[in-house]
Amino acid sequence: MVHGMSAGPPAPLRGAVVGCGFFAMNQLHAWRDIAGVEIAAICDRDPDRLSATGEGFGIARRYRDAAEMFAAERLDFVDIATTVESHRPLVELAARHRVPVICQKPLAKTLPDARAMVDACAEAGVPLMVHENFRWQAPIRAVAAVLATGRIGRPFFGRLSFRSGYDVFKGQPHLATGERFIIQELGIHMLDIARHLFGDVSGLTARSTRINPAIRGEDAVTMLLDHAGGAMSVVDCSYATRRAVDSFPETSLEIDGAFGSIHLMPGYRMVVTDRTGSETVDVSPPLLPWAARPWHSVQESVLAIQSHWVDCLRSGCEPATSGRDNLATVALVEAAYESAAAGGPVFLHARPARAAWSSPALH
Image 1: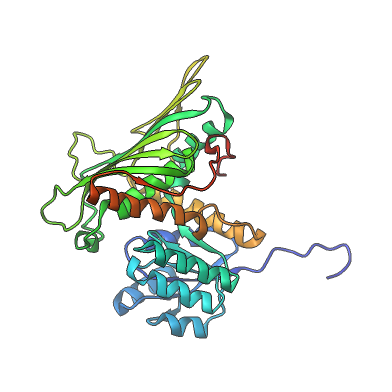
Image 2 (image 1 turned 30 degrees about the vertical axis):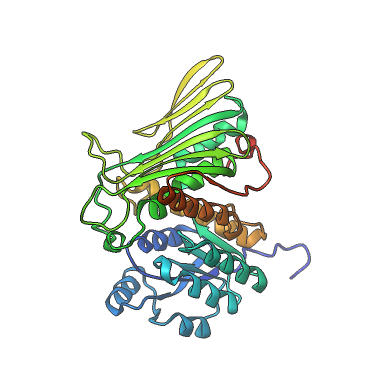
């Protein structure tokens, strides 16, 4: 470099996406929006889906075998967007090639598998981030930002609710066939948000049921969480709820604090009440050019979390939803199934209590 001249922009990060299914389209659109990133290759076992995705996104290098792709490509990261059964072998394959990994949630079906994946990446010296995008939704980030100011004081109660009759099985038919459904697929998001807002969990009690006779797993659950820092939260999820106006895919949220409250209502309205009065704020997510209602809140969060990943890769910082952090969320999913089956509380070995309510908000 000539003395006095800048080094110029960093070289583009070369990534690959494994899995070209329903949700991966959002990830591919988001990667295209992030400066300094190139998706150099894609991989999928379905040749027709692989071809259609490659043509649609202008990606010429296409593989039906992930091992072949890792052997042939020089990659700065891989985005694993497959179903949960394939996560561990694919993450371990990436670790063997020393390629940083983003893995779709749920990270694994069991906590031992999740730990093995985290350990494999740690031993290889590569970062692992879970694509746990719900805490990156604009309304949730807005709630976290208010909490971080201390405006409503220390939270002592929270409720996170996601209730809908939306037909999620149409776009993802595999969800109807598994023995586990709503806790593993949707509840995991809500549990992660609860951890993010109120801190880690010391005890959990869950009740679940199956309403839809056409599916195998549970489609409604209510969970009571005791947080290590003293707060209590209720997390309830349903895909069996019929309402005049379906708010899918919005999360409703209530938080009571020592000095006030936060209420996130359908329509992306956040009401903050403190000792001086109440304020209503529009926290609607932006509608990205490639997004479509009502999915736009989820789609915007995909762009946010993937941008965070790029920032972490370039800075060397640990991602907010790292594999290590996500182990605590996976443990809550396991605890919820255990509690629902046994009909009683499950106690967890929570990490030292952290005051999540005063932590810096995601940005």
